[in-house]
Image: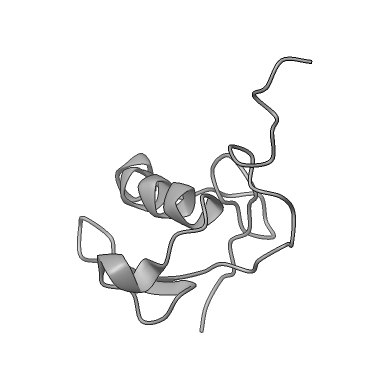
Length: 84
């Protein structure tokens, strides 16, 4: 209903280039890692497989994390770590 923040890795930023506070980012980062590794956000209280509502630690803002699968191979399962 307000700003939209986007990212792939790193801190999400809105269209004006402003990021999210570090306290909220500490809550978001593990959830983003869970999605990147193929996890289901419903297992950690999410609203759906790729969505979760989060209240900032100060109680001022409600965020809705929505992940969109890109179809890329999983970094850990895709053999990127294997030596040739």
